[in-house]
Structure formats: C-alpha cells, structure tokens
Image (cartoon, rainbow, N blue to C red):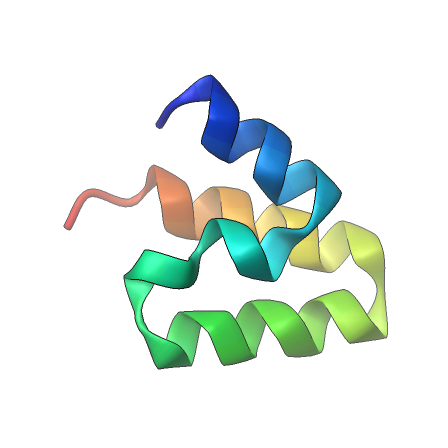
Length: 51
C-alpha cells in the first residue's frame, strides 16, 4: 500500500479503491455517504488485503 493510496483513501475513499472492482467501490461509496469514517476504514481495509 503506497502513501498515495493512503492519502487518497483519507480524502476520497471510493477513488482509492477504483482498481479493486465495482463491488468494492459501491461498498466504500455507501459507507462514505453514511459517514466519512466508515468509508475511510473500509477503504483502508480493502487496500490492505492482498489480491
């Protein structure tokens, strides 16, 4: 996980998980709309998982 991805996931979480698939984007987008902190946490968890 690069520093760029971490900063992007803090500023705009759905954009950080763009290459992880449509499901990840939708989950992170919904969580971000419900609250910014859950979206950031979900983005960081998704980015931390190995493919």
